[in-house]
Image 1 (cartoon, rainbow over the protein chains, first blue to last red):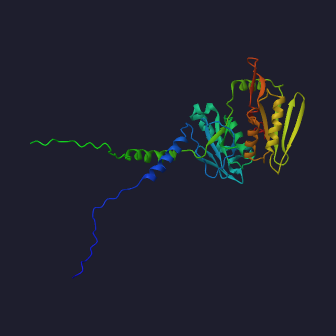
Image 2 (image 1 turned 180 degrees about the vertical axis):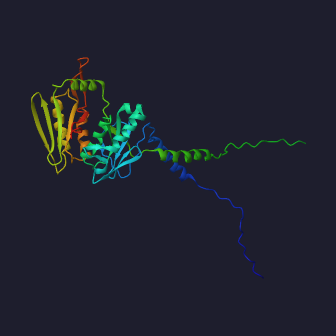
Length: 162
Length: 181
């Protein structure tokens, strides 16, 4: 008797069911966590690259003001870099030769705000992000220049911690 | 002969739950929330205070003869608490511990000072040029509020004359040497 050739039946147009239980699980947990920590605040402060903020027990949310940031490498006014920082000090080219605490480009930018944005200028508020390792002498220069430009109200931005 | 059509009612029927819309909402919401979520919560050191405390600070500012308290911060020596009362000055030094500012001792000493002068809410901070920014923020934290839930300082409300209490110590901090040359 001749052997029957065993042919493997190949089913075409086969469909398969996708098990998405674990994906739904993951999405549910992620959604609940993100909804719980959703930050819907009016004021948005962008962290600056290379800048480590000090921690504080302060519980006050940020307010409207001009954003300044001093990182270990640069001084930023809003989103613009206005001066370099070398060895934890503002570069000499940006300082006034007659006043060792006066930062010229910062004063110029604040003067522009005084002229163009009266509402913001009236608040006199500055949100200052500074790297935690910077010496007070560098931070003082920014505060001094801001005071001279009519912005004496400096708010120090910190991260939450003990 | 008509056959009677009998409806088959299956009382144990199962139904399939359509999760497609739910999944669609989740897939849209999760990226939006991920982009807007704040993993690093930023706060500011601000001085929004209860009204009675604000009034006390105003009173202190209007009276030049009022007692003034200042903190002189030196990186090597530590923190000097100076109380200017009339023509005399009382000085107390908080030495460094392990080459760092002894924050616990500083806080304890500030609590003692606050108990002696409960109506004073403003303090002058005079750091040396080489003191680091994070040390200053830590000192401000130690001076702002009393730690421990039971500690309250009683003082007289200048407007009503009634006695009030607060756990704030020195929330108004002024960098007194910013404008110096």
